[in-house]
Amino acid sequence: MEVFTAATIVTTTVTIYGFVTYLPLTKVFAISYRDLMDENRRKRRQNPAEHIQVKIKLFLVVVAVVFILAVMAVVLTVTLLKMVPAVVMLKKR
Image 1 (cartoon, rainbow, N blue to C red):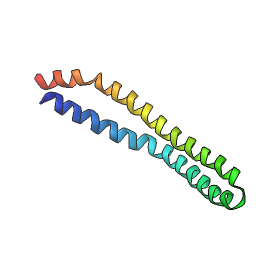
Image 2 (spheres, rainbow, N blue to C red):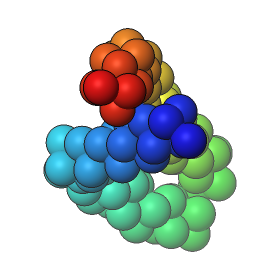
Image 3 (cartoon, helix red, strand yellow):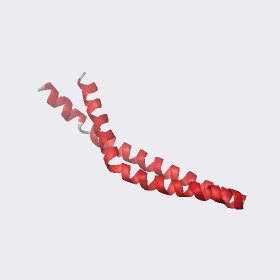
Image 4 (tube, rainbow, N blue to C red):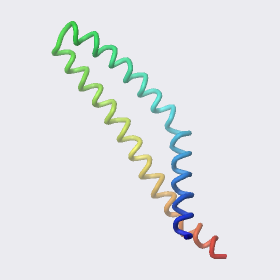
């Protein structure tokens, strides 16, 4: 039961911290993604070769966002899991 409570605390904290800290970051990437999508539509009509280059840029933006969020989730989870034994010890008192 204590482990479940500690895991719930860790998950909630990571989620809140992620939303507060990285929401502006994802908005920046969303704006660049939207710009790239507009460029993609224009290039598809004009020159198919450039259209492929824009698709590669889109893919790299998506990979960058996923990678950054994954790394930060791992760092936060490891940091907070170090706190779990302290939370369990406090519950036992």
